[in-house]
Image (tube, rainbow, N blue to C red; front, side, top):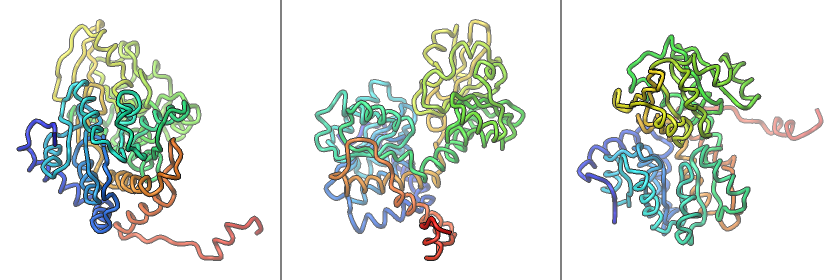
Length: 415
């Protein structure tokens, strides 16, 4: 079976989307040209589970240009764009995904993607790894390693590493400088507010925004909210991050204090139930909740659905839940990843950085797997440096270099 999408006739629209992002992703274009010449993945099978929209599709085509046999699925039931999936299938890739798959269908798509028996996996959130370890270990016999895209996935991998059960090396792409400093901060910061603004059609200026957590994603969300004219409150469990948020100019308090004050709430922690029904009961009528974490557990959606006396669609991608106290709580994208489940995800230029790290990390696995331990592997400084220099060159920016005298000075303990 080549694909599991609903309408192959959507392919022309998907091809146009992919061409648009291709024209705005100079790093991947350069890698595509290199890979066409060198074919570094010739004879290799790669299975990928990442939010299946145009930027991801272009990464798949770049890897395929390098000789890889690709099998592709999504990493969220709402984030797959059917026209993009159709375009990939039309390009000859094995695609197993469609928009609004059920949970059962979603995990079946993960399994079908892995029945490809890959050599390398590219994961976003850890579902490929989980399937290969718990449900279908028979499909990991050819796996030499892989790459993980997001914070949540790296957390899961490190837990597996601590327990000694991770059976192959996984590169923590999320932790690369050229990923988390830009994708998590500037990408999430812009795309979350793109989702909130386009779906609500409401102004951000004058509102109080509560940002849950203050990691790199939350930093970007808070920074963009402030730039749009909002008052920002940050909630945290880490005293150092809380202090940093305070010094960045935001109010910092516990969620129980922030809940009655916020107009818009955005979660980005990687943890469950950071907003509970108890918190929601104290919120303003028609407060807006959005999740920017990978899984839909940061907002207690199960508890909200159980507590609500009624619910219904308020606008496209927004569900309103009436609480017993008569207040309405509005949730974007079913509490799933709002910036991709209810928008187009990160800007192309940002994903150019992240996916260049992915492609080069996959190549690193291919070339070095024999000497790598089973566990979480850091992205090398060399990969970060190459990508940063190429991005600067695409901007026509030159930077200084150390002289030999300066290098000797920095390497010496004597003045």
